[in-house]
Image (cartoon, rainbow, N blue to C red; front, side, top):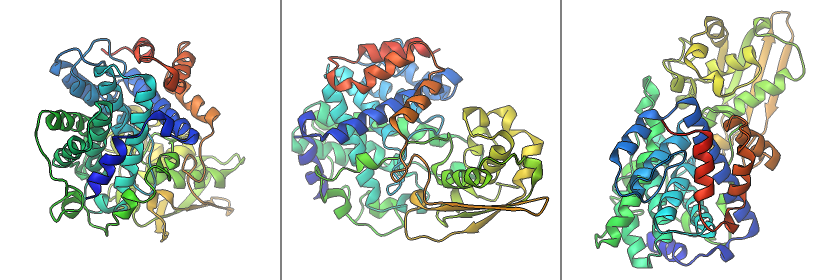
Length: 456
């Protein structure tokens, strides 16, 4: 069974087995994840999830990111998972279409504290989690989404269980049981897309908590099906609507690392619109074009992206909520034309209520651009026709921050510092995270994150 192969691999890997580029990639994604959580806490996002996690309490095993008191490890993982994903600013693997850090970092930090793991052990567990989430998603690219299921929430419990099991030094049999148990909590409906709800932001928290709980249940003697993945009632048979290729999960495991191919977002919005935002930016170039100068905007979008970012409400009415705005491609294109950038301030209550931006959004026309590659890795094109008759036409081969066009370390650090409000302590925090392999414990990282954005 593939879960056995995965468990055998994960139970034996040490930091010495990680190639240098994998260590570096894992540290980059931990940096990005921590920064996104700090930004969410600083700006007041994800508060319901935080409130519930804090109320759950439990023995003081672990502090969540930005927390000042210990909670049970499952509760801490829940709070951190919600905060990492609350802004929809966290990383995405294009082929898997999963937010890998949001379901790896929470379990690594929570269980790492619980078992007094070293920084090297936490970094290793996080790297294994990143790899697992990506490979689980790549078994059926876009398959979960096509069924109306959030892929991150589907693969997240298994990812978190593997991270927790690795840090708890499970043998293969116990880890297989943990994975089997975790699969029964794979879920995450995409119904929020048709409403003003932000349930998607909660999914990584629930997935991380359930994965940690699954690991504990396995340690206590509960059993789970080893066929949780490829079984006729396993998660792919039940929750996907595209073909499956289980070789994607096991081939080259430990030698070919998908963890080095996870994209880091430059925009706090759905990944599937990023390539369009890049194409519009390229079309504008250094011109002094104003939004009022644009008569028509045609954008070319992958057919798998359209249902998620070009729904029936988009380009017709203002976003129904700030989270809805992050999935409204026409409105986001219009906001880019008006503001010159897409930042966390783009998606506030005041911003999404702007009538002039809605007027521009109604000028956006969406044309399908079929492609053989997954939607999040596709090319994009934008054609802007100006009121004076000029036409600005630009294409991009992929979105910036993706595997093909990665953010530099300097650009990532710039994003992190901005997420931390350019606090005087943020540089020290970044140094601690990037040097995690040499850290003996996590205390300094947790103290600094809490000092920059203390939980309410």
